[in-house]
Image 1: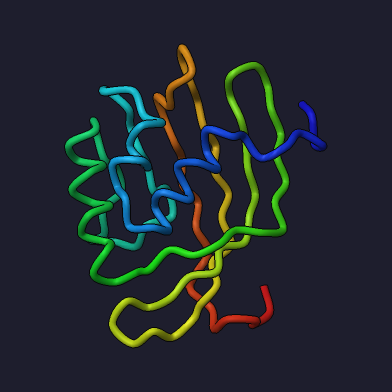
Image 2: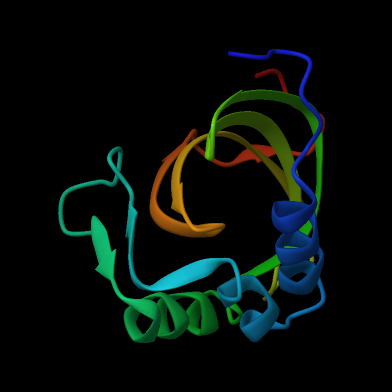
Length: 132
């Protein structure tokens, strides 16, 4: 694994699209049969999305609650097409405009350049600039 790998261009482009409210740009990185998992989801919350239509619906619904922002403090580890990424997200509550931070760990499996499985481990929302 390469700890010094750069943030993948395909993921950077998808994240920029998401920050601009463009769910279709985010979806371009996924295979049609992709699975997006939330292993740390609370009881009763969505734990798994199967296929682009479910991922699209979930991300479109997020637009009413989260305005996605930037990522920093990024560590990338690559193994072939698969990648593990740690990052700090800086976002805004869509209703109030209040900033908040979330720590992410993404384990991403790819095939033919497209995401087939994304395990999305998210920490809790913290006030912007709060301790990790």
